[in-house]
Structure formats: structure tokens, C-alpha cells
Amino acid sequence: MSSLKLSVRLEALAKLVPQSGSVADVGTDHGYIPVWLAQNGHHGALYATDIKMAPLENARMTAEEYGQAGAINFYLCDGLSAIREIAIETVIIAGMGGENIAAILEAAPWVRENNCFLILQPMSKSAYLRSWLFENGYKVLSEQLADDGGIYEILTARAGNDLPYSPAELLIGHRQLICGSPLFVRRLEALIVKAKRAVSGLSASRKGGDTERLTKLKEALISLQELKNSGLPTA
Image 1 (cartoon, one colour):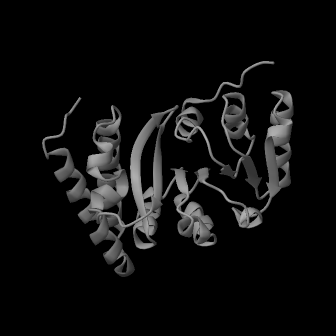
Image 2 (cartoon, rainbow, N blue to C red):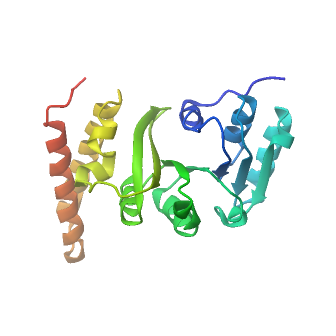
Image 3 (tube, rainbow, N blue to C red):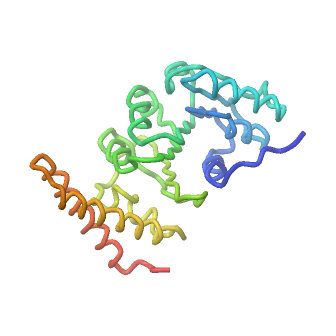
């Protein structure tokens, strides 16, 4: 039986999963993470959910191909809705926008109540997700970056009270959690370039209703530049 090889992004996610305990992979797509976990000796029930039948069938086929069809429980549902009565210990939500991730968690308050371990990988709107987690009783435990043809952000979190975020930290993560990443400076510089372009573009074509957005963009840019100039390593 062949071993499933994950992409850099998916492997980074899979390696954050505790060795034991029940795991739900939400929006599983091809089911690569639960199959990899089953192949690599994970102890605990594995659940794969998806809102669409086609990706869920793809996940079943992946499990069959790698001899793990009996090791994974598959559910066609929106987010975590079909497994709310199951004692889930780790929840993976990856490969979708931060707003979608927040909506899935908002619809499943039991995740916070049960102190589930969250592994989150937003493809966009990571600032929105961090803000939502802070406002809804979650504490971000770790931040990391994965280089897989682009830089991907990966957060872990549990129920708890977090420290407030600066405008820059909403975009890149709490300084003490992320600044040790080898990709931190590259990510920070990319965010500064993006913020400068956004400020310049909005300033040139600003309408009356965009004033608040422009102010927030300027605050974020200043905060990002302050973070870059705060004595962090530059290479």
C-alpha cells in the first residue's frame, strides 16, 4: 500500500494534530488530511465533512485508494452541523476564507464550550478571523507560515481570553507568536506593500463613504511599519 504524500501546506496542518483524540476535518475536499492521519498511526476517531457531495465522494475515493476506507467517518453537512453530538477534540478548518471559518464556528458554539483544539488556515480575511476569535472567547495559541507556492497562515486556538491586537497584528498575528517564523519578514513586507497600494488607490479615487476605510488602512500601514522598525530581524 502506498503512502499519501501531502503538500507543504497540508503537511503543516496535519502535523499540528495531536497524536490521539477525535478529529474533524471540515471542508475535507479530497480527504487528504484524515487519510494521512490514519496512515501515520493517529489514535482516535476521524471525521471528514463537506457541504457538497462531489468533494466528499472524492474523499471516500482517496480513503479507498490508500486502504483507509474503514478508518474515516464521512458526513455530508454544512460545517460541523452533523456531528454536534459527537465528542470532537480537534477541529481542522482549512482552505476557505476567514469569514467562512468564523461562520462555521459561530454556528457551533459547542466547539468553544467543549474546549476543542482548533487548527485554522484562512485563505483570505485572516484579520477578520482573528478579530472574530478575540471577540468570541477564543485564544490563539500559535501562528505559523507555510510556503507552498504562496505564503499560507496557520493558526491554532482554544477557548480563552486573548491579548488585544494592534492593527498590524490583526493582519499578521500576535508578534510574540509569529516573529520567529523564517517567513515572517517576507510576509510583513508583502503586507506593507499591499497596504501602501490600497491607501494610494483609495486616496486617489476616494468617495465620501470610504473615509472610514481609508482611515483604517492608514492605521494598519503605520502599525505594520512600526512593527518592521521595532528591532525584529530583517533577514
